[in-house]
Image (tube, rainbow, N blue to C red; front, side):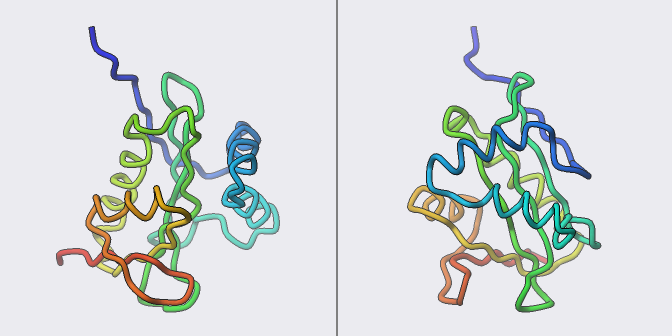
Length: 149
């Protein structure tokens, strides 16, 4: 019998009703990722709707497990930025973050643009290089991914 749990990744065009569950867990860990996502969404500042942008929701066995997406970089127009990635603690080490990231990277492939991100914490700093991101020294940025194109 397998211990694998079903991970479902779907594109969202609105914040899910379960955003509060993500926000409570993130806030409890000291991460403002989901609060900022919610505030920016409510204000209409960032809704992941421009060409090349996407926001994905992950569910495990029907329960909200994580979220993440990609937008245009706010500093350098030629770059895309991985944004608002968060996986609830009870769903970590199941491949949820990897599945979200892989879907986002696949979505970004046709745009053939460098992708940057800011890893918040040691776990994230170790995670992103496993997907091909390399550490860089840039304001508000910790890692860079250059597509092979």
